[in-house]
Structures are given as C-alpha cells and as structure tokens.
Image 1: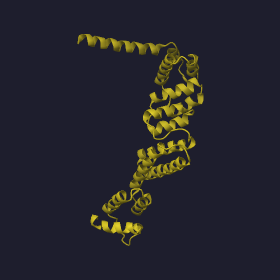
Image 2: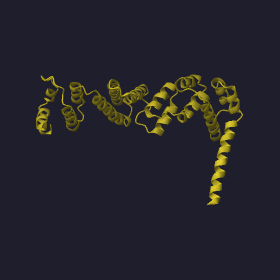
Image 3: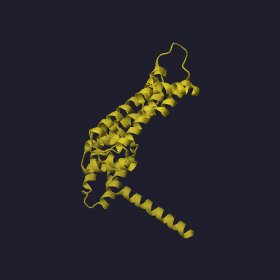
Length: 272
C-alpha cells in the first residue's frame, strides 16, 4: 500500500480524498492492512482533519479506533483550554471538548471498553462543571490542585465530579472536604450524599476525628470541638464508637504508636 501513496497525495491535493470512502462494488471483507494504512496516512498528513478520520472509521466500521482518536483529540484540546482565560472563546472550546468526550464514550461502550468509556464520561462531567463555573479553574490541574479544587466545591456532587476526573477520591482525600463542609459548616446533606456514594466505615470517623484535632491544633480560629460532637451525633450510628472517639481513645492510640516507633528508631540508632 505504501507504493500507492502518490495516489493518496494527489487526491488530497485535489480535495478529493473522500472518494476513498465511497462504497465499493466488491463484497469481500476489507483488508485490515488497508484500514490501518489509511489511518496512519491521515494521522501524518492531516492530523487536524477529524472529519476525514471519522469518515474512514465509518466506512470500515473501525469503532474502537474512532473512540481512541476522539479521546486523544479531546485530551489535546482540554490541555489548551486549561491554559486559557475565561471568556467566550474558552466557553466554545469547552463545549467542543465536552462533545468529543461524549462521542468517545459512546464508541468505547459499543466495543465494551468500559474503563475507557467511564474515563471519558468522567472527563465530560468535569468539563460540564467547568461550563457551569466559568470563573473557576477546574480543568488542566495537577493532582494537588485537583484536591484543593475538590475541597472548594460547596456541594458533594461537584466535589465528586472533580474527584472522579482526577482520580483523587480516596478516603484520605475526602477528609478536608468533609471537615470543611459537613463539620465546620454543619452541612448534613454533604455527608449524607457522601455516605450514599462511598459508605461510612468506622475508620472514616476515626480519621475525621484525628484530622479535626490536627486542624484545631494548627488553626486557632477554628470553632470548638462541639462541632465534631454534633457531627458524630448526627452521622455516627454506633454509640460505642462515638464515646471512644470523644474520649480521645484513638488519639491516644495514635500517639502511643508514634512513641513506639520513635523508641524503635532510637534503639536501632544506639545499636548502630
């Protein structure tokens, strides 16, 4: 097929490349080598011409290749959007990226590539949130910036979209958002939504109490511990666990573990 490249160049120069996509008279199965040769040719000679690639994929039923191309184009466009300032141009670019991710997700689903389809849906949801909040920077963030943006969202749904898009939704990443919105601001709906999505294990309440005490110790302007008491009374269903947390049992265990670790390090140092 490489020997026919001059024909493709001539069709491209004459703006007649679409003739390649016309249905042929042969009913034989199309040669997969031809499919990928044409794809490679277009990616090199016309990398920004998504319409020709789309026609190629439709002509030969290359669903997965279409999905991969759309996702790659969306990722490239999103990187550009992340560096732009808010304005009409950025809004239009976000709409285009949103559509690319949606189309990519649909194609991945047709091929049962559910992981890739889910990623595209998460990214589309993030871009949709950016369209709702044009004054905030929500796309093109580092993981650390994403955690900050996640904690800044006043509603759990919005924080969840950021967490899913950047894969920062581990339990430790939710301590600051829950502390800020559900405990400090007494937003019960925030934690109820969190519980419905992730559940609420005893370890979460223990880690929240430790996180709360750490923040109290470092920020003098914080409200008294009664906020934590009210939060636990509302959301922690185990009376025994609430009592143990409020009595400081787990803080003592943590301090003891830290002390044991320090003692071990000192012992090893002396032996050396």
